[in-house]
Image (tube, rainbow, N blue to C red; front, side, top):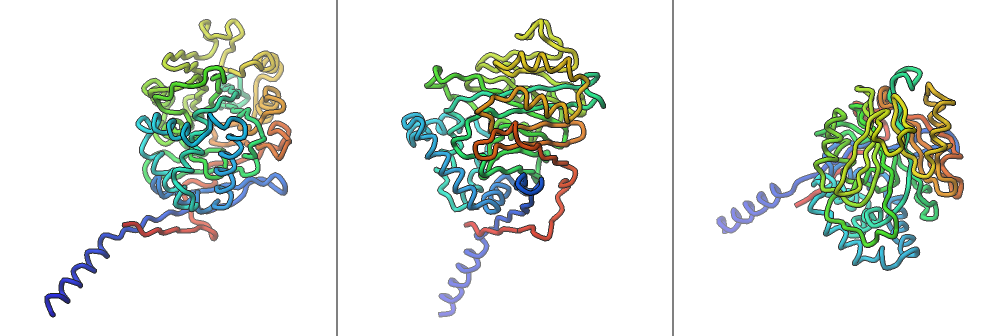
Length: 386
């Protein structure tokens, strides 16, 4: 009897030891005023813990965004956005995707209570979709105070309703560089962002629908951007991570460094990669290039070219005006202006059917939230795992 009791006690101890607790910490607040308020999340921890915090702090919105995004995508093209197509896309990009991103997806799923496969499928919609945007970066004599100013317009249709669930997330990882991503509830991928080392990332989609089906044997930029934001502390490192990545589809990128006060434009039509700096005679827009600046606004480049001499040297207010000028009218979901030197952001989301360029640009200072300081409404979420 004593031996049996001892065995039971030993088994109980073993079971107790095998139980681990994953903790996630963060809080939810708002920036802006009145009808222009935008939810802002500040989360810290491992990738899984930060994902768990994001999913928990915006549980209801995450359900609506990810499930609604899938539903509306399928209404537009049932075959392209079917479970089979999205699962095949994940099977292709997953081997090239950083483990931190996968862990964050798992955290979002468990924090929100959604099925992990549904979370993954929603994140594959941009991988198989096509869309267009704008990017511009100025520095030096092109800017009043010499800072690096940069814009990113996400020109994407508003019918999917993503604008109803905006979220600016400030990630403060246990390992890596803190960074801010203007995004949407439950979305781990970065369509843009800036880190606390002053690296700002802009993407412009070039892939036409006529290229479908795409070769997806590589990494999608939305997960690659998160990797760059968490690890790059200078422009060469950020650009090097693009060079080294097995890339897919066709994109332009504008990468800027607020501390180095310079930026480059990249034409990343996989597997080829072309890189241009300011006033480069080989730039595809030459001779319409500029000193202390790079830009790519697709069919709206003439609007930027006209705006630049009329408004130089720039400041944040005139950058907002440029962002509005080059936006795709009728399909403009999210606009961001960065001061990468001061680590400040101005962000505008569409509101219902009103495009982002018509909305106020809300100001955010990263230094108000970094380093992480718990607030009265901070939460510490603990989940037992075997």
